[in-house]
Length: 120
Image 1: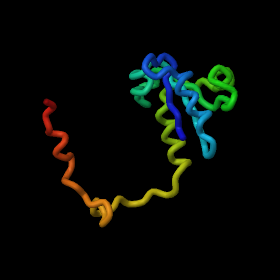
Image 2: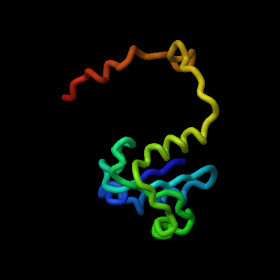
Image 3: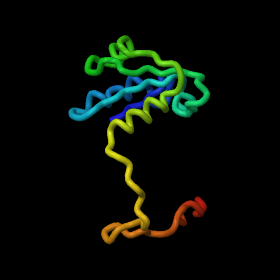
């Protein structure tokens, strides 16, 4: 599980989201802390190299300990996530030529009628 939080996030405070790492009892857990707030911390283009992030802190002893032991890395967290994703999966496969299956048929062509529905 890849957890991403932002150090100045006022909507989902990082020390609160960090608790999620303690709830995952098996498998690979990666916690990454982006600089800035709720939006700017996530929307940090890899090509801008404006901010930084923290990674590789020690899990299992709380948020403060994680940050004390984490490594600060200049730039965007996006390349780190990309590398993590690639390390989790098998080889790439071609997309199916036809969407849906017998059990889960395609409902309608993209983007879907819900995109054009007006809220009352």
